[in-house]
Image (tube, rainbow, N blue to C red; front, side):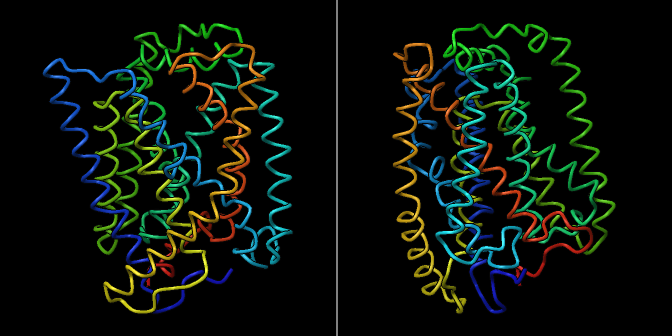
Length: 367
């Protein structure tokens, strides 16, 4: 596949800058605020804990997958779905969503506990997958040319938001999962998952995985790749602290919106038509404003349709939804349903862009 960015295109540099230090500083500030608030015995009201999830309905979160129908045509004939016509590509993606999303929705009705654990595993993979793309294709991290380091990085990056909150806040984690399955009239059970010995084993294993992956990456990186490896290591340390200190609902809600979804939207913008050929601040600002508006227009129809489907899904679940936690649970279960086909589309994007190919670092996109 030809690279979506041509030589001299300043977009990748702008995207790297926007996804780099400003986002890391935001998450570092949240760690400090949460730590100080916890030390002072302060806690957020219910609406405050659920606010980040609520904002993700319209701000980046739900919309970041609402342009999947445009992906095949923008990848072009060299992609895994060799589709150049927008309507044909939309039909292919629509079929993926109908079959996989519909099947997963039935899975929630038939076996909610298994579906809930499947959602954790699916999100673990997908959020790790998103960070691997950033490191490999946008940052050109040399140490990810090793297949073992790539898979280790995926497991670490996906496990930070999915596992660390379980280690640090087991009762709150249990409450969220219980709310999911309660929509279908069953109790979560699974006491072994939240037992201290289970969490101690998981924590020790995940810490070893994190350190081992970073150590292996440092060996692969060599002297030339040291700077980009340090970015990877710094983000891993930052996210370990973030999810260990910030309460889970707030932490995951903000991560979903300001980290994962924002990075995927940046990926989509690099596939969209038009480029900033000049490195001047004015040219980059003009491109970013235009690209952001175009994305909002393109995502709006299917975001609106998703909200309609969410309401319809709420009429199918056996439980009556009345409280804020119940509405949040309904939203997250619906997100699970649309995440499965979204992961398929993103995996096809990874294949087309060579994210998982051996050798090289994907440096062509950052030139």
